[in-house]
Length: 105
Picture (tube, rainbow, N blue to C red):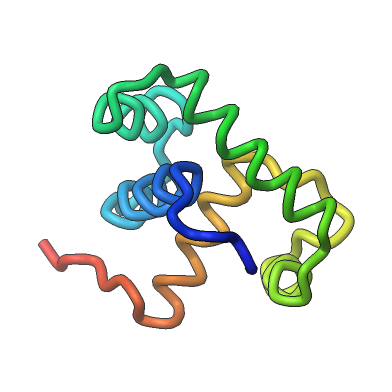
């Protein structure tokens, strides 16, 4: 999406998607996903949430082609991209493309 690396907000997003992808059902964004990410990075849940919102706001401002394509592929065009929508849309994308494979239990 044209985000310059390293970027702590991208790290937060990557970890949130990994956590969501390891679960068979939906998890509570703040309590079960962002809390774990925050603890891992020694920051608050509010800091992680704010970082992810800034990441989305930056993408919405710049409108990179890849971002617009991602939104279109995931039914997000015209919608407010919330942290939950972003995490779960990315989860579905990485699972669909085989980037992450869930363990069979």
